[in-house]
Length: 64
Length: 155
Image (cartoon, rainbow over all chains, first blue to last red; front, top):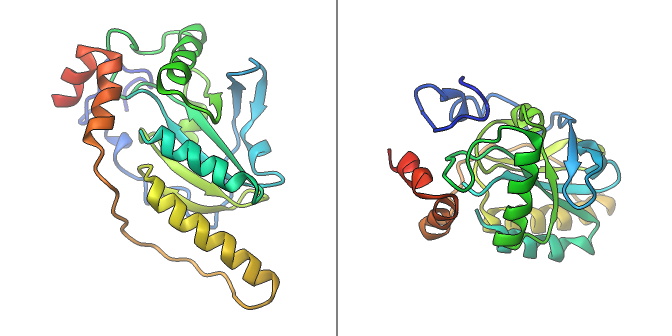
């Protein structure tokens, strides 16, 4: 796969973007944690804090 | 991107103890206005613009510049996961379809109540789902980003 923040999408170079979805992180497995930044506060947040006490719906995306 | 409908779902399930969040990732088709993220400062400003222009009401969490959170799940552009309390993945979708998420949530929340009454047991399924086409909405995202994003997508 090319650089994560590519300047243009190339399906031949960025094959991982399409492949492997069914092979990774199956239902029943533990969700990975990562440190992210809360846009509203600018503070660091742990993804796992979303589901520590509640069920969580987590969408990933951008403008495009 | 079905932001308004997913925001509505977030409102709908809050009272049933469900947390919702949007993780802002890279731009899948960078354009003149919203090009590739070259620093966290750029990524923050794009996330802020995304919230304002698209009108996102959910909590927005910005992934780091390397896409650590995004890549840990999968680098597809518009994923949705439902994660049970404690961290078990209970739903994964390679594209976000609010109707499909709502079907899953309604069913799951009802069945969790039935489980407390000892009436049901969990099982795992795998299936092909069908999402509504939203070419217009997707196009709007590309247009916001600029002609380069449209050319990138159209190839």
